[in-house]
Image (cartoon, rainbow, N blue to C red; front, top):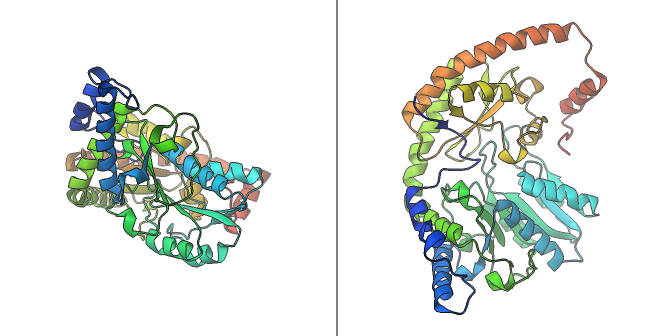
Length: 413
């Protein structure tokens, strides 16, 4: 097939043509600063306000003033968590999960080193949370609960409304990382027990470098970025106008096409899984038993290395990933799959396929056509490696890690 087959849409999406068209005038003609008093700048400010209203509609917020524009999901997560900790300085406890995106995971690990106590909620072998573990983990010292809506690696969706009800009953602020959910799942945050919510434009066909943080009206919140008076004193820094305009247009488009896109993309995803499970016998879908995002499939190929699979897929013009783009370059197995206690022989061979509205059935068939030969080639190499390893004692560190995993210990910290 001509061109790239892009099955890595949880990493980023293609900018829609109508989004690029909406952005262009604000890179050339309408370049005024939206904070300026003169008309040339204030007219740009009005367009930023329109984009804010479009994003408000996408997430179903009650008022556009609850939407703060940011540079990305990572900034939004940091702003939410740090902002609430600063607003509640007498509280030193955070509750989150073992399967969060690195934006939350890394920050909470950092905060642990600074003296905060973090409760890391586990998941079962299907990636599901135990809400009773959450309930028992809350205390009078809990400053914040931060839990993702949908997992970026497996697509597993968490019961956010149920979780939020438990958290709110204790009077604790609840932050949701909805970066993978926004534009894929319909919701109205105004009707949900959510206090803060993070989204990122480039996950739903807007450009990279723009996101938004929802902060429920009336919530005491300390700004993360300090300086000017932008975003009603809640996020200093001159707004990235063209990207904000693009995000607004993408939000409008996502809202109007979400239902039909979800049905079509899920059909493609399900077909991809069925074909690969049949053509590659040593494969399994991680998280398949749970409700998942319609576009996401995490498939493990037994005894294989995911990065080797990606290299050979890339040679065939197919783009996929082994997990979050924000952990690319790490040699460590996925912390998400380790938390799910995926057996060691399946752990390293995980590949994430994430589809979009641009993908086709022909592309799915092409991936299935190429994948068996890739797997067979690597299985031959893997069989030789296993034979050699069987003749040698396992290194002490590896053997110890195997024992810990067998007992369900956390290896992701």
